[in-house]
Image (cartoon, rainbow, N blue to C red; front, top):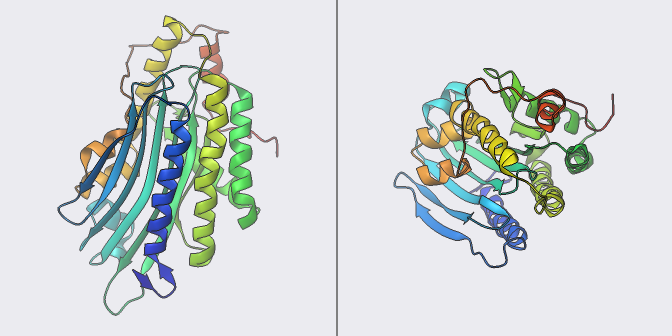
Amino acid sequence: MSHAGIDADRVITWFRELQDHICDRLSVFEPTLDFHIDAWQRPAGGGGDTRVLADGETFERAGVNFSRVTGDNLPASASARRPELAGRSFIATGVSVVIHPRNPYAPTAHANVRFFVAEKEGEDPVWWFGGGFDLTPYYPFEADAVAWHEAARDACAPFGDELYGRFKAWCDDYFYLPHRDETRGVGGLFFDDFDELGFEDSFAFVRSVGQAFIDAYAPIIERRREHDYGERERDFQLYRRGRYVEFNLVYDRGTLFGLQSRGRTESILMSMPPLASWQYGYTPVPGSPEATLYEDFLKPRDWLGAT
């Protein structure tokens, strides 16, 4: 689709290239393991390519999804949020990445870049980009959080001095579990409905974010993947993974859209950790590394010392 300077085909081509690139970067850490690849079609329109690394030395599960979903009418979750989209055909395409390392000292990471365009005869198309990336540590390292946010700031910088602060705050707000009164992790970037730079510059911004994600995450994995750990750390990792499940099933907008639009369930729920646990009334031991996570890392924070 190319209309009024909007080139969905070019976006789709780059999203596929990004999927390949991220898979190549992750494969370096699992030289004896191949991605399981599922190419799938959606009966109502569109399809995708789901790639999963499972049971590796470094990654307990790592999934890299590409999807291109089309339809004549939007699901209720989307049209309720944007009533002007009712009655429009649409294309929703993107790449979604969720990485659950085996080592509890290595953080879970998530990234998403997406593009949406809706059309109606006789009217201009409605389009936008969305995406971002966020980091969810189990055992906190301030150096990792700072490097992560430096990468986020640098990805935004060529496109406006205010974008990092704005999208960092949006990430803190979005990846928040109100029933737990805590953030999911140390944040990063989150943006949606983004069209303010025009198509070309908005697309360039999304490309910058997509590349910055894997450039920031690979060094963290390299530093943490061989850290010594025992049963205590593993148990805490599984307990904290439960928060990831709670957020994705209760609050995540992408999960809701995917399920309501009758997307491929296995691909949508790829983001779930392979193992998680829930404990009743858990409280960390005062002064422990687990307590430090709660006290210093699971709340919005200025990681770059700008304020």
